[in-house]
Length: 414
Image 1 (cartoon, rainbow, N blue to C red):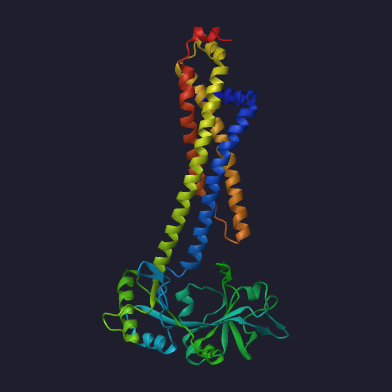
Image 2 (spheres, helix red, strand yellow; image 1 turned 180 degrees about the horizontal axis):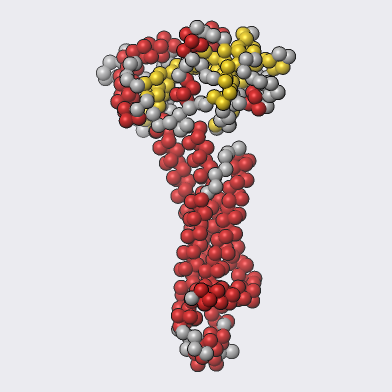
């Protein structure tokens, strides 16, 4: 059986050489379809991986209370923006005091500025550094990992220590590139901060660098950055995921109490759960995957018709050869298997080129976008199965037609 298969592959390759132009064009059409499929699925996998890394690193056991839920409410058939009051420091602090759900850790923070200039000795940055006021629970609640030094502890926050944790860009290509960053003094708004930790690289989210940030104790940040209407964020992590729903409900009631809302009033704040973000990302990437399949199948349908056509023409051109093989004792199944193997060979060659080009295109797009490239094993398997099915369907009719030829009529064919 293996010998017969090997012989049919040799015959298939010989047939491809005799019909080189038609075969190459068919392979190109198949490769284009598979390239579209694999390329888009590769990009979708990269987007999914990077978004999940950005948003879901904090885990599925956290939730945030912010000014908005990032959605509009409909009124009278048109969309109008719902305006919520900001979350003030007094409200955020009051929430933290009242919220005593078991196994939870609540963090308060605010974006002090996104245009700070940071100095180290005689060097300084462009005014593009983001400064964030945080407490001791901000780092774990946000999924931020310290690679050098340490994070803030309760002593740092309660005593308003002038210390800071910096993003990875300060060490890799910024002010602290050529020195040991721990213990060095950075100047922000005229105040000197001792560097106690460096965060793991995070990359960019929606074009905003996550590695050009300086984190300082929240009370120190409030004393340095006293702009009006500062909006605070509240983040809570719960140690036991199974209690997340109850914790969110309790937080909702607590925040309503802080806002002094009566039972008939709508919430004038938003609660977002980390698992909601993950599910939203999954739905978006799911739509993209379906789009990739639709585009790929439309292109592959054309290639399957072209492949079937070339094999039907091949059967017609080789009618006399089929007659000779039958006259020498070849069975119908042997003839059908020969043409079937030829179709599979062409289909798999096209699929192989499509996989290579699809991965290459996906890699180049990921490189240009600054995303982490993920080897698309699922896309490769899908492409292999798809090209196999295309060859299977396309080769069925020509193989049956070849096996049904009458040997006497075939020998008379010129």
